[in-house]
Image (spheres, rainbow, N blue to C red):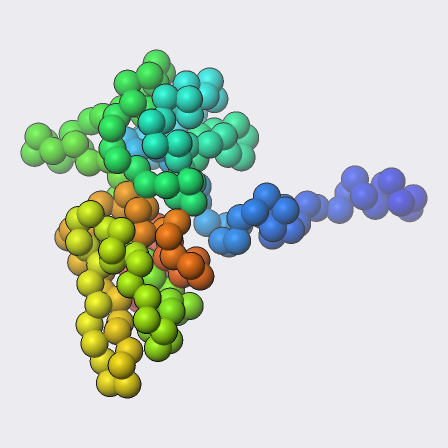
Length: 187
């Protein structure tokens, strides 16, 4: 087998691709779609990859992701739920809809999660994620030894991502709520 044949038949390492694209998170993690996006299968079927939502995003957090589909990148900032992405989406892959007939428009089912690399849980004074959270969903509970453990009030967290970018060690991420539940069950 020639070198060219081995190169073609060798599968692409997604973790290596993620590294070179600057993504430190696991490559198997599902992409975070714009707020008010349809479920993943419907979204991928309907989205035309026109990039109108990316250009309309006032916060600059939408980018062209894998396959040309829009993804949220919280390293660029937070979502203010302005609705500009939904307003320009002609095929309605992003559509402000009432999912529970309550009159409330739910943008997504995301919430913040703070990992074990958190400086505060490791005894270093840092509360930048709590300071950046406008909803005050992150508070710190003092523990023995001067450690302040971050606690996320899941009823207040909107998943806006304001806490992600300022974290100096990248310990904060925004995940789907059902993914959060699965992670807690595995612990």
